[in-house]
Image (cartoon, rainbow, N blue to C red):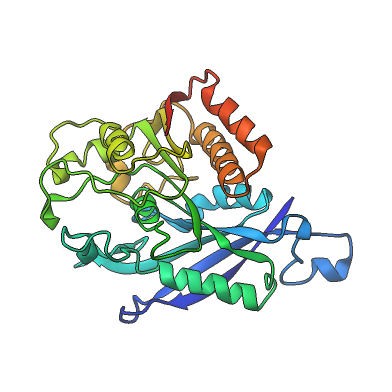
Length: 327
């Protein structure tokens, strides 16, 4: 399937210029013919075979350019999804300007958390999806009741803690890599506190056994152990009750914090915290991309064949899979 993309921009309420604008890249399944007129169009027509399309909104990690996740956006669009990546430069932490997935730290405090959303960009992104449904090349092609939230690192946490039907009823599932919900001490929590998650939608939580960013950030949560997976495992065990058999925990053997990205940006300081991965990034990306795709096909599109393939992929012996749980 051919994949094409186009750009959009939107304003975030409550932020001052120049930090109030996000730039979106929207990927969609396209149809191409041999006609010269069609090829020369700015946007190729939509491939209608799998319309209406569920929509994936992906939140990048801090200081991770959206381009680093284009590989995943293309793979999902090839499966018949519309995928939105975005870049937002803002002062998420006072005095520090960075690429951010958008985190409202005030709303993470003990007396506020889970009473309101923590993702300031999400209402704008959902409004943009509605606009795309009403005008432009994707008009009438989107399934507004099947929106999937996904992300990496801090962006993964934003995705999974805001996939709450009480706030955003159009969200149907959520996934993330390289994240946990352990609470930061500076916000007023006790050491080693795991924050609860919305627990009514299918979840795919993924981590790597060589995640140095998680291991080397333990002190901010009041944890002395530099373990790469304990906080991820505890999130799955304690933040959700499960019971529907649609929540998954997948630990990848030898994957590090940035195994999900395309090209590591060595000019930024965050990669310095990471451990070396034992396999090339492409190896882990191929596996993650397939598992994410089958998870969406199983629990959002309700495809029985995908369910069987996902079960087989997760339960068959694989040197890249350290462990797998479902509840």
